[in-house]
Image (cartoon, rainbow, N blue to C red; front, side, top):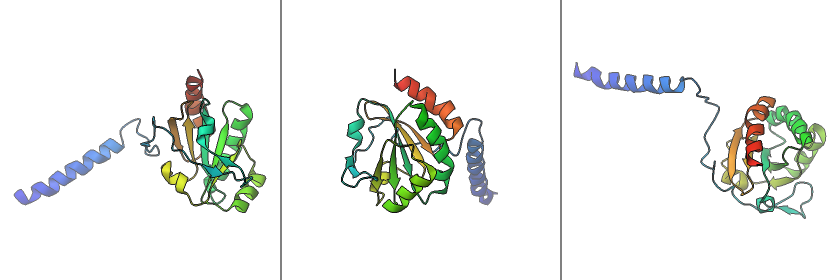
Amino acid sequence: MRRFLIPLGLFVVLVGFLAWGLKPGYDPHEVPSPLINKAAPNFDLTQLADPQLKFSPREMLGRVWLLNVWASWCVSCREEAPVLMRFAQTGVVPIYGLNYKDKRDDAQAWLARFGNPYVLNAFDSDGSVGINYGVYGVPETYVIDKAGIIRYKQIGPVTDAVIKDKLLPLLKELNR
């Protein structure tokens, strides 16, 4: 009888994890970021359009902004592109791009083909800045407040629903 206690205990633990994962309101697509409510990692990268110019998040202090991590090789970025183009045209918030692990020519050709919603793009060719931001994969989008604090992280494409339900209410609150 005792030899069944360990497997039974493991089974109960496994059922507990399964029940927790299926509870209402739990979204397995939302991966919590340890950077939420912490200072956005600083960087100083060349711009995609002009390697003679640089960009650093320090330049954005005093403004609420979005940092969208994308790449020309990213299939989901194509799905996100028209949504970001429409959102950028509203002027609600400036969108800055972080081109991640890409080739400069490929990224510029991608922007010419799918549109450029960005005020500018920083060029993270080796992905080191993306690592500092905890990028799991592209696209990812960060809302950064006036003090340079990350307030939200969207993993995966920004959709119209994400804009309506998450970004707009948060941006309204942060811009008060």
